[in-house]
Length: 186
Image (cartoon, rainbow, N blue to C red):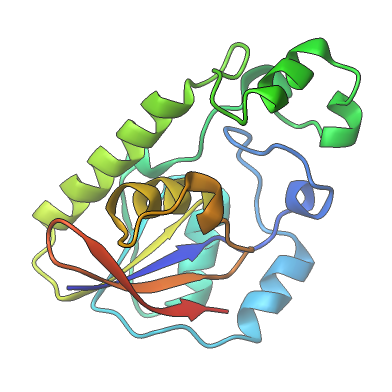
């Protein structure tokens, strides 16, 4: 099975380097322009996070396909860090503790990283089991892509090694157990 894992286009929060997880931001004008200027791999079906930024991206890059929404593909809840930039959080002691943990501690009032990763990977597998197609495009969030790649990609790398820019991602082959990267979507 060929799968395209594509991160949504830019939002105002992305432009300002803010933690945007559960905030349901739409794409910004710059994000829309960037997506329109790119070409994306073909697919038989589009699977999407329920967030506005993902739905807008999916409809822009695959206008002839109605995205199928899977709720648990949504981004991590950054809790007390939502809507803030690293600069704004720099004096926050909880943010410093979280950074010192290498991103492994739970977000204050938000998701626990391991639970987020499990949720998104379980939903990824559920979507694959329910769709009878050979070429799928997932239009989701950076954290969702990083979770899926960390769990399934060989050779193994860490979560943060799979960080992708807005409107970018990976074209991969999935054999039901492991992911092999075919190419990057730039």
